[in-house]
Image (cartoon, rainbow, N blue to C red; front, side, top):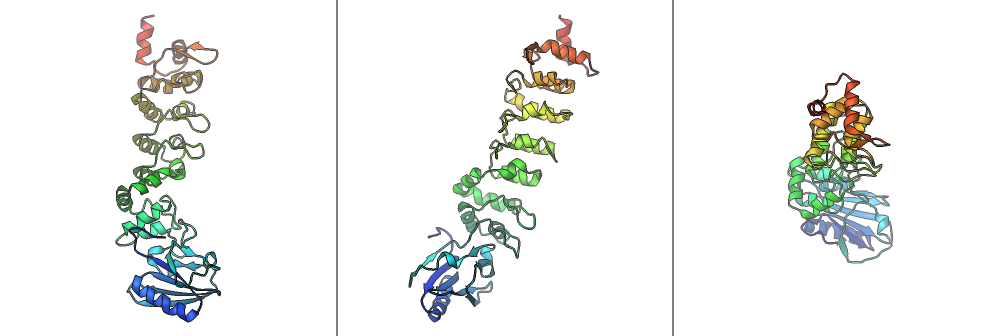
Length: 341
């Protein structure tokens, strides 16, 4: 398989005689500077020739390996493993092909704790070509390494630069199921995922990032990041709930959180959309006897007219009764209307 624009990293050859394998891999490793594997078939011996970081040719002989850890031979391919059994039985005498020798692109190297993509990013001079190649072929930029470091959090600018120069990589990242985006409480990770172009409006197993941001740690900051990135507070999740509906339904929701979501709806001219078949957000808050939430919604442009509840009741009348029964000051708009009745 040709790796366009990428140096040859690994070469695989097949031999019938072990001595031929030893000579062949030695010559080819010198020529290509790639890790060269010589499989002796039929049989179970693998001859390995490779150059270390100083450019010195090294040899290794493996007897019936279950798999070969490419990390041991190439610092550029940390976390990649090769299974000879995948190829044994095929005798391609005198032929070789370039292959991607890994069982799983997001495999975490048990020695260094890195994924291949994180290893590529951690190089002193990151290889953008290799980074693009890994991402284009499915490396997940959101995988967490053994150390707890997320690939995308490490070397931010390197990743972004690589993606900006490669439309295919950007398209791949946008197509990722955004599990981390929807579930993370880590602000740094959330910011990076949004910066990479993952949609804040794409659900993961019915979960929307904005809805989930109403719970857990860093709620206000997560909401701000998601709304700034274009998250839609009226979009429904797998259970038919929008962020606007949730924020007026949750007990003792801080006014600043309600205001943040309501302002986003106001900017979209959607503050008066129905959050269920019979209620707007204001109608639902009135029905839940939440005068502070009602004040915030009215402040953000919610109309105090219409109906709420079932059977339908006059919303304006319901709001006046609610404020009359509480210590919450009556909003100015209702005061004005009351004085004219």
